[in-house]
Every structure is written in structure tokens, then in C-alpha cells.
Length: 354
Ligand code: NAD
Ligand code: IPM
Ligand code: MN
Image (cartoon, rainbow, N blue to C red; front, side, top):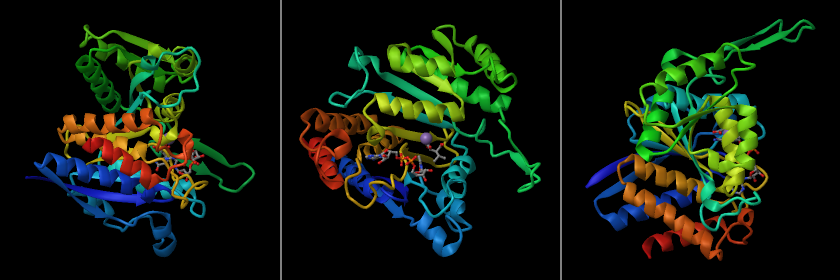
């Protein structure tokens, strides 16, 4: 029997509500399969922990996580703790410490999911976003000079290394080759005359190793317009950290909403644990009401199953979500329904068993 050790970090707000359902589905998939099981260890780290202990996780938090096979994270950030502290001390520290340089975010309109776009065929919204997840605009490099004085100056650097750009672009080409789909690079070389010119140059260089992959290159402003007007243009997409953050919320909006958008933070070499999470935040506006949509977290669980080599179960979990959507009877309010978070989790579990 294979054992997978999962560090579960619900974090803040709706994080706990949605991860409970995700774990329910993971455990049921394992039971139905019979050849593997999960050992889940829950960590109460987050903003409440910060208010008690003055930090988001223990000093040796990263050491504690290192031995797990994967991390399953809910959401981080809550009113009362400044966002740049809560996120940098937990979520971003994990992504960086474990060199999770690939952020894999499917933007796929499932059957039954709501779509605000007109005149767009469902199958036209089917993108694999590959976001650089370790550097770029999120490098955390900069300075704050003469703080609080009239002449204060703030500098936030974008850091684009050759290694960092090459590895993410190469990963994207490999994905496009494997999926037999085109690869689109999204950048902004017209205005960001160092970082994005460099990105574009590396994209061109690496593309020579993949003559079989059709490529496109868009400026980020035009790309955001085309994602709405003509989403079929985008298949596999590679972009920088900040652009990927913004465009995948846009992607979520056209593919059913934040309640459905999942992401995997991967260390492809498997030197460190990878992390699976919904891409939404802690949703303070609905936290504690039991009405958060758990589908994004369940989809992230399906990505975890894929990553462990159980692609059959990953696909089954995704199909179960899709059948609940098509059925349309047990949905949370964001999907137009009246069901509770746990009822949606139960409905997905029943579909998985069916
Ligand atoms: P958010 O994603 O938490 O919420 C945006 C909107 O989407 C809200 O109206 C919310 O109710 C809705 N929503 C989100 N997830 C939902 C779900 N599963 N079901 C139903 N509705 C859902 O974004 P925000 O309000 O900008 O951020 C709130 C906090 O979360 C902030 O502290 C922010 O920094 C943090 N945040 C964390 C992550 C993360 O941990 N990965 C991601 C984004 C934001
Ligand atoms: C996401 C989130 C994070 C990001 C924040 C909370 C730091 O928005 O995962 O998309 O920007 O990466
Ligand atoms: Mn985001």
C-alpha cells in the first residue's frame, strides 16, 4: 500500500471549510482504489496563529513541511494582519523555500459551469496556464528610502534570471508538446525594456528546441482583451509571476468563477514537496457561513492525484465535479444554488462512487 503524507494548512477564512471537503474526496478516492492512502497532518497556521504567536508559522515551519509528500493549502490572509506580512510569511515562503517554480492553473470551462462570455463555445475556454512562480515581479527585492519623510522613494525590482526564465519556458514547451497544443507567451516587451525584452528573447531561443510546437506571443494588454473576446486562441500559456496572477483571476471569471479555479505549485524535480491550492483567497465576506464553494479545492486535490501518478483518479474527481455542475441540484450560491459547502462535497463524493 502506498502512503502519501499530506501537510494540510487550511489557513484563514474559508480555507478550513473548503479543505475539509477536499480531504473528504481524496480519502474516498484512496479507499475506492485500495492501493494507496493518505496520512493527513493538519497545521493551524495563519492569521489567528499570528495574532497569538507573532508569526504565521513556527520558526522551523519549513523544516516541518520538508518531509511531506505534498502540501494542501486553503487560503492565507485576513483583516487584522497586513496582507504583505501574512502572505510573505506563509504562502510565498513555502513557494520559494521549496522552489515551486511552476504554477499550473487550468482555465477550463467545465460542462454546467457558468460563463459570462457571449458567443463563445464551451470548448473554446480550455487553457493550461503556466505561471512563473519563483521570481519576476514577486522576487521581494527593493527598498524603501527615507521612509515617512517627504522625499521618500520606493523601489520594487523585477528579477528575471536566465535560469528562472529558461526553466519555466522549457516546462511550458514540454507541456505543449505532450498535450499536442500550441504555446503562447504573454509578456510586455514594449514597455518593460529589460525584463520582458529578456523574457521574449529566451522564449525565442528555447522555441528553437521545439520546432514541432506552434507558438504565439502576445503583449499582456492585448492578451487580456483576447481572453475575453476570443479565448480559443489560448491553449498552453506561459507568463511571468504577476501577469500570471492577474490573468488567472480573469481566467477564473470566464471559466465558472473563483469557486472553481485551482492551482498547483510544483517543484517538478520533486526535490521538495509541491503544494496544491484553490487560487481564491480567504473570502472574508462569506467566511464562517458554510457557503463557500469547495470545487476549486477539490479540483486542486485532483491535480494532486495527477502529480502522484494517479491520473485516472485525478480525471475521475474532475468528472465528478463536472457531473455535479451539470446536474445543477447541489450548488453553492456563487454557482446560483443554495447548498452548503459540505453538501457540495458530499455530492461530489457520491458522483465519485457512482
Ligand atoms: P478572494 O478570492 O478571497 O475573494 C474574492 C471574491 O470571490 C469574494 O467575493 C469571495 O466571496 C469570492 N470567492 C472566493 N472564493 C470563493 C469560493 N470558494 N466560493 C464562493 N465565493 C468565493 O479575494 P480577496 O477578497 O481579494 O482576498 C481576501 C484575502 O485573501 C486577502 O487577505 C488576500 O490577500 C488573500 N488571498 C489569498 C490567496 C491565497 O491564499 N492563495 C489568494 C488570493 C487572495
Ligand atoms: C494567488 C494569490 C497570491 C499571489 C497572493 C495571495 C500572494 O493571489 O495565489 O493567486 O499573488 O500569488
Ligand atoms: Mn491571485
